[in-house]
Length: 170
Length: 441
Image (cartoon, rainbow over all chains, first blue to last red; front, side, top):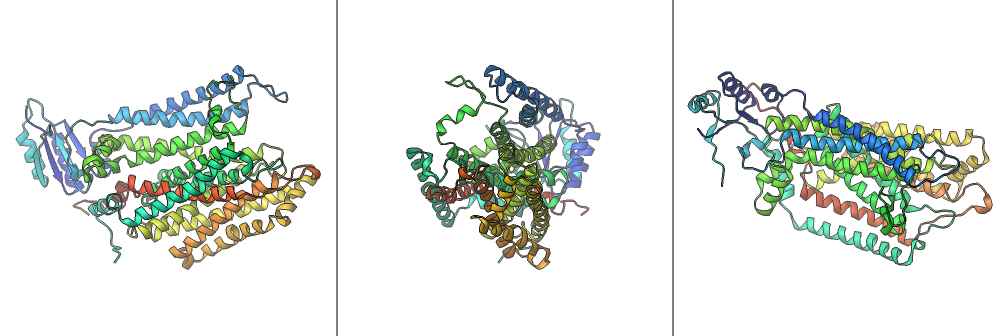
């Protein structure tokens, strides 16, 4: 199977146009890397609403339930009658619930980010340092029936400054 | 000579990473002085207090709370603008936030850590601090979650965790930039910190969503934290504390002092690290307007606080108001009014609002005033509760003065370490504010 190629672009619009052309020509395994988030690139790859939101929502709900349960359980394990107040006091326990809702919401969002984005990924994946400075890089992986030469021609036609084959360092 | 032209993408990487990767002798000197002050003024006296007992502080039987608590409120307050402002401005898509938010969030984090140090100092027997965690301890005790002090534990732990995650996640793409620009051990470390970030469309997409949720969670959290700190006071029956206005009063005061703190920190960063290209007039202008608005709200709440005391019709509240305005600590009260209500009115003038030097001085004065405010709250109400024959008096001891000075050194030390550890300006977000790299443009 052919090696991956990675093309560097100076301009964002060339980069997006090249990616669009590759998609239209049937190259589906493309990866778009940029120094800033580009909404057109995300749209092109069909990225819509992120699944992170489920982690945030359910994490927050679970956190709230756990917060109330924790305050209630502590009150029941160590009963402390004070001035005739209820052992399970709803108003103060709601504050603990509120804080735990947020704490678990944040932690589960973090977990969601890692699961959805696939990070951490320390393997030697296709990458050009320039794409974290001032260039846009477009990486293409090939299937058996793809023609690497055609992909290379497309990216060059759209103004790629450099096209290199990706060789992971050992 | 300072270059004020709009930087290119590569300039942003170079200018911001230079701060981290090039370290001069001046930096080490300032860091050394800061660590020394923290050790001598904070940790030394604290060890002394641990040895002789909490009696080393000026607290006494009628004044159980002293400067440690006012310091705690001050530092929690200072922490408020960073993360809160960053989150609000992120959601409202205010571009001017992008150059300043990282350092403002760091301010939040380190102010919270400094505040946490004061909890440790205040509790006396710090080795029992784990009793406030909901875990079975050797005495079979469980925390009483009906207590506002337990609300504090939960709120501050949550705020510290959320703020740390918020600043860390926003820094991941920049850690990748540090990784790419460094070699050796630093490269290995930042490879781990950046999680192997490559800036793919999917990574940006997921980060964007996650970051938005962090911001959404952080805003109500920040408001709840200082409300809860205020309930440490307001849920008691002590005259001068027992007021419903306390929660908005504390939250407003916190954002007010935090915004002033951001101006102070931005001034120093801009001047000491040559960041004039990135931190400019627009930031000063917007922060100035915010400060002015907050000062007006703060004045209003202060008037309402006095009015509530007067309108209550109880002699205890009248006495508390009278002592605050005309008692032993009245000079401090009027100093607070001067610095927090009168001086900020100068910001109405464009000439003052757009001058970094003048705004720096005003921001310092506001924070002196806000520090005084917290001291007055603690020192004037609690020692003088209901019965005049049980009235006491509180004046901080030398140990407390020293620990207060040391806390500023702790904050400075943490911040100095931060600027070498994390890009103090968000590289990728500043790039978003520049002219886009488009052929059409």
